[in-house]
Length: 175
Image 1 (spheres, one colour):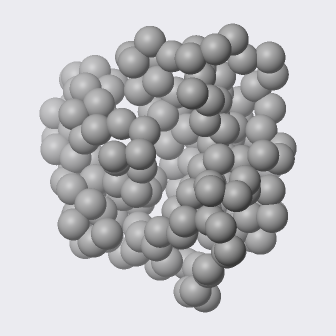
Image 2: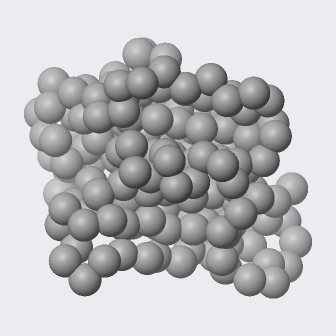
């Protein structure tokens, strides 16, 4: 099993954190993992993306430029840039708060999540990235896999654990 994942959006949307959490979940599951960030010099508001590879085999290169299995697109420029490189049978998760056009790529599963608006609803725009994680539950991991990573990451800030988990649960409920 090898999954090539690209998470992409504007700087400040938690794209790199989203990918980092995916990588940590993979490590917890005993998989070989790579995480490679890419972002513009201006960071917040600029473009940001990261490549994550999860595999039960040795990974030759951390780059995912084409042959994407899963795309998490938080904005329209990200969708436009990476959608043509998603493999047939792949999965695209789109933040419908920002990307308002319907996408229906042939041979690709598309899931829309109102991530930004759900984040605001649960208490912080900053958890929109966690809402996007909800779109991957069942395909790559479980809610408990995410919970384990968040509890470790935010051990000294339990209020952040609760906020992030609430965002994920709201995302799940909206699917």
